[in-house]
View 1 (cartoon, rainbow, N blue to C red):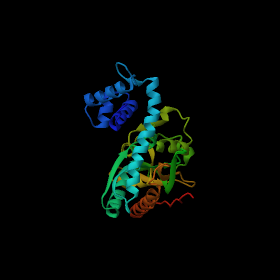
View 2: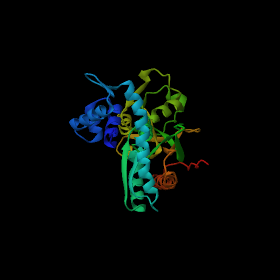
View 3: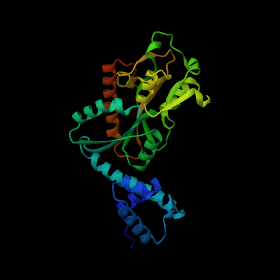
View 4: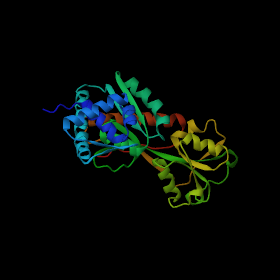
Length: 312
C-alpha cells in the first residue's frame, strides 16, 4: 500500500510552483534538505520521477504534470474540510487568509484589520499582498481564502462581489496647481509615470489615456504609488493614483491633486473567492463589513466614491 502524506503533497506543489529547491523550501518554511528528502521519498513511493533536475531549474516530468492536477484537487478538498469546521461555528474565528493588491493594501488594511478584529474575537487574519495574477493563482490553489482586488477577473471558478467604486485622480507638481486639468487625450502628450507591468492599475490608467500603443519613452515606470508620487514631486512627470491613496501618499510630497473631468476614470473594488468554498455565506457577510470599513475610510479622507451593488 502506498503511503503518501499531505506534507509530501504540499512540498511537491511548492517545488512544482517555484521550480527551485531553495525557493520551494523557503516558501514552505522548511530547510532545503528536509524538503528534498520528502520529495525523494514521494518519488520512491511512486516508483517514478516527478521532476527533471537541471543545473539551475527543476521541471515537472510528464508524470509530474499529471500528478500535479490530482494534487491540486486533493489539497483544495483538504483545505475545504477546514473551512467546513469553521462554518459550523456561529462566528468567524481562526485563520482567515486574505490576499490584497498593492494599490489597496496600505490604505484600506489598517482600518479593515482594526474593524474585523473588534467585530470577531478569535479571528486570525493572515495577509498576502501581491499583484492580481499571483492572487488568482494562490486563490485557485487554496493558499488564500479570499482576495480584495479590482474587478472584473472573469474566472468561472470564482465568485465576484463588488464592494465600491473608486475614482483615479491626477497628481502633478505643486507648481502646476490651478492650471487646467488635462483630459485623457492631453495626458498622452505628457510624461506619464505608471506602475511596473503586472499591476492592474497600470492597465487601467493606460486604458483611460488610450496609451497601450504609446512609445516607451512617453512612459516611466515605478515600483509603488509612493515612488510615483515622489517622482512627480521632483518634477519628473505626472501620474494617476486611486483616491484612497491620496491622504497617505501626498502628505509629504510637493504635488497638487486634481479630479479629472467627467467621465472620470475609476475602478470597481471587489471581493473574490472560490465558488467551491463552504464559507460562501460567511464571506458574503464579510463583504458587507469590508464595504462598511471602506465607506468609513472615504468619509474620513473626504474621498468621493459610491457603493457597488451585490450581484444577484
